[in-house]
Length: 272
Ligand code: SF4
Image 1: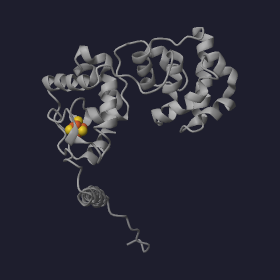
Image 2: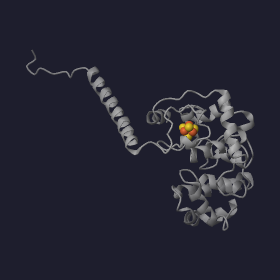
Image 3: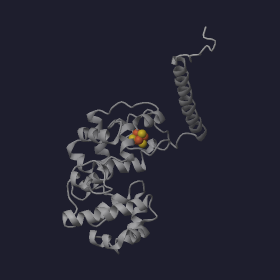
Image 4: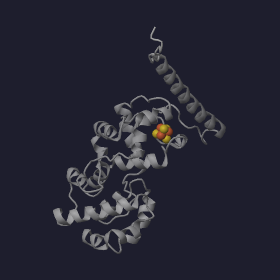
């Protein structure tokens, strides 16, 4: 994951210093002293359902679906009673809805069978529920149970690697790194600040709005976007350059491989 990210983003940034990290969080926290999830929920169960539905979907899309679903069914028993087909009708505007409907029914049944309809408050227990991975479990632990967990999604992965805040080859490595470098006073809300920063400022490739970024002076990204963005022609050229470079690289590799291949044996039919 990180290799692809860095190939597209050019080079690996320098890791941020501890002092820079503390200032980074101080600035983000000043901008939003009490950050909250953008998902709409009323209790741990509705949060769990909303987060499960949000994989590869936008919070806005999930909120639209749950605004119709939750007034009809918002407890494990009610969702199980609703059934997979009816549940599907409420969430079919969300990507992967068939699978998600299956998982929400199964996890609700498991909550009824094993936890008396309550949502457990440990990551390990949450991860055993159908359709619940580490990221979802971390969000629920953090938001519903106020535990200092950091759920690394695509935004946090990008911000960590791009800025030098937490460099890691996959989401788990970035999570572990963040746990290590984030000052304790910022741990509880770190995940929200980083997601919001990634979602609205340090956006995906080609789009970070570095010229109005409050932490630009601390960030080690080498290709900061100038005010107003890169001129379109240049951006196109840059993309072409990257594509050509990787094409040349793969051609070189193929030529090298061919050079190391032993010559084909030829059989002499005459036997001489
Ligand atoms: S300066 Fe640019 S790359 Fe660095 S954190 Fe801000 S938006 Fe992201």
